[in-house]
Image (cartoon, rainbow, N blue to C red; front, top):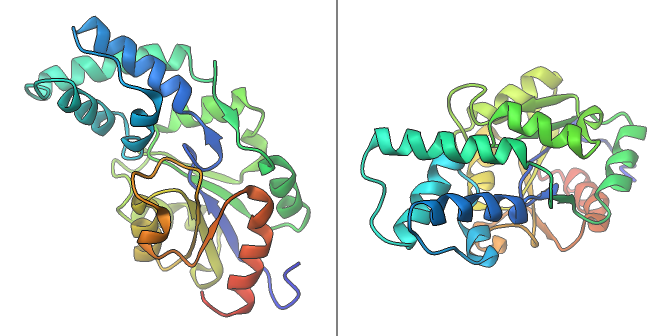
Length: 231
């Protein structure tokens, strides 16, 4: 693998890319909706509205089930309710996607720096990785509140690169949504998308460099991009 050159770093999105968090997010979201007289949403629907943080998730969920959230004060109340519930149930049903662990171990064995760039709040992201035994795999983690700006803004991606001391020109981002593609492209990275994540549209629509259907395909996709000088 990587006979010509290795990537300077591989950065991963979290929800829908490394970890299937939709079951826990849907359960917590539905408890909030039901406490406020709204109908629960199917997990399949929740998956399509994940990706830009809890505030956006709540906005989209309330808009789908009735009147939108009234104002900033109401939003902050709902956000705190969601956050407190989710923090206590962060990995009850969530699980690492198949084949991710052996692939990550392969990258680690080749001393490729690994990072996480997510719109999940940093403390929640760290807690999730801790619960799943993944925290030590990554050399950097930037959450949606680390810089007070989240993806698709490229600054969180650039911060991971800075922490990893990685060359932008040979770094790769792995994600599952248009948000990830936009952030990675703006930061100058090559992009691989997983097809099994939480995008409302097929990820090929967003023109990543490659689309993979399982983590087992990731090393080959990384190798192809590096050796084709696409980044």
